[in-house]
Length: 240
Ligand SMILES: *Cc1c(COP(=O)(O)O)cnc(C)c1O
Image 1 (cartoon, rainbow, N blue to C red):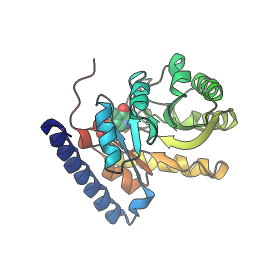
Image 2 (cartoon, rainbow, N blue to C red):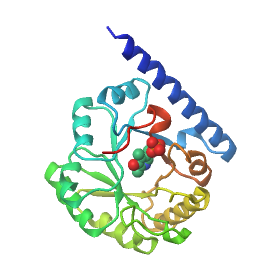
Image 3 (tube, helix red, strand yellow):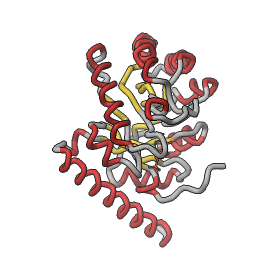
Image 4 (cartoon, rainbow, N blue to C red):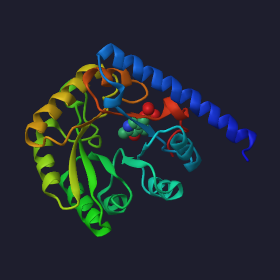
């Protein structure tokens, strides 16, 4: 039995998800790409496990979170099924805990994080996929905030460290377009990085780019994974 509020939420999320799907399909058509080459990650941060389950009912298998321990609690509550993507800043001292439930960590940006994730993955007997998060801010005239990825010149070194680390798998690259900058050339720069890396790591094909506001630019540039929160679940309350 479901309450009126639950059924209202179901309709609301279904409609928003359909609208996002329509945007992705249109962007694929414009870019002559196949929808099946793209994975939609629904970002459930700040939203309850009930919403994550709802997305599962609608066939969304990839869910994104950006904070520990909220992410771990939700993964426990939802249970087996989804692929969990950890996005956003990760403190080294929380990395081992995140490695127990995250399937892919999109925000690997420093040596110490590689080492900590590796220890956590090994202790949990798991393999964790890792993306190097790249900060293109400085390249596009923005000051780096120091917490949104590593500079492009460090990417090859971090990729090598991930590839050599027990328990970790190097899966590819990720970026968040800097605020106030046209996202298209940023995502194109990310795709060029990915192409260069794949000469050495042919299996590292994930290109994570594009959010509620700029998913079309990401599809056009060649992203493989879109991370969409607000456009599916609604505006989030401001962060505490
Ligand atoms: C929150 C978040 C998203 C989703 O952003 P929306 O604007 O809600 O679509 C994507 N990527 C990262 C790293 C995030 O933290």
